[in-house]
Length: 348
Picture 1 (spheres, rainbow, N blue to C red):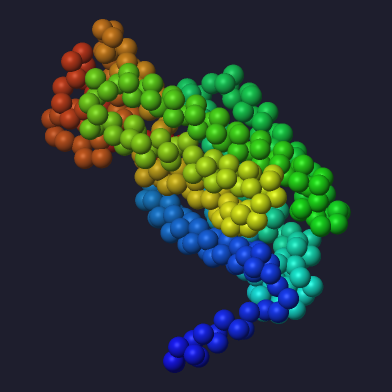
Picture 2: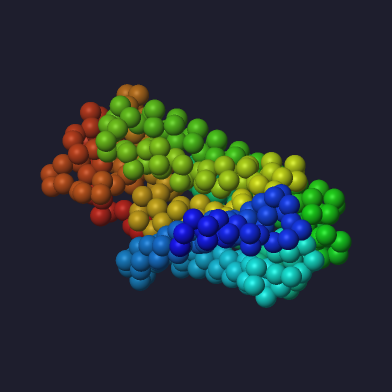
């Protein structure tokens, strides 16, 4: 192909469409591509999580969490499948719709196929927020008092999301109508604020616990619980960051939302699936872990040593004749339990 033929390729641009119109169409298509990347990541994570859960003894397999993971993956699949069908129609079957592909994206929002995907993602967000709230409850010592305010935020998020779905079905321009934007902004603001709040509280709690036990355990042996990666995963901060970007662009009616919104639905599943993956591998924070750090904190401050809970901070490579928690003798410790004394169910 010579340079003249290559130059003529640019002449096939749609007639009557401005550069901004083309950007809108590109943003819809590129957003879908990003969602595909997110779905691929979720697919791998789900397989890894299911494989880890399958290694549990049958009698102690946490079927509730297995079902939770399956449900989240199913909802994310429905959402992505819905987006796939809408994009097929926008750019292939109905590309001559008024306004082109971007126009079809708008007018097809209330179609059954699209709304099925929206509802799936909304339910997915409920499950994701609920899982992060559960992790907060665990990390903060299983205190119901601390969870009252976050639980009310979650309830408000559920109510506003239901209002968004109802108004999106009823109003002209659906998702982008003024009232829908109000309910949508309230919904995602509550959901994302909840995640940011819980992110800060979970990370803060882990930092405090790390400070308490660092001198007793040593940083190397506590790394799986206190590393930066552990804090990021446990707090589901990935969803908080992506969600914050979306809510700003959505509230400002920025076309950048077309890039962020599709992958947001997948991130809603990826963040909790990362948590479930750690739970399945026995590396997540649990009630026993919190109890263990409390005991170690007391011992480090000169209290009498006990063996309660110390086995709940297992080393992944238990040694012979050596403390499986620290790899060495703890100053005030008399006796510790083996890693194998920790039941699988303590992680859930």
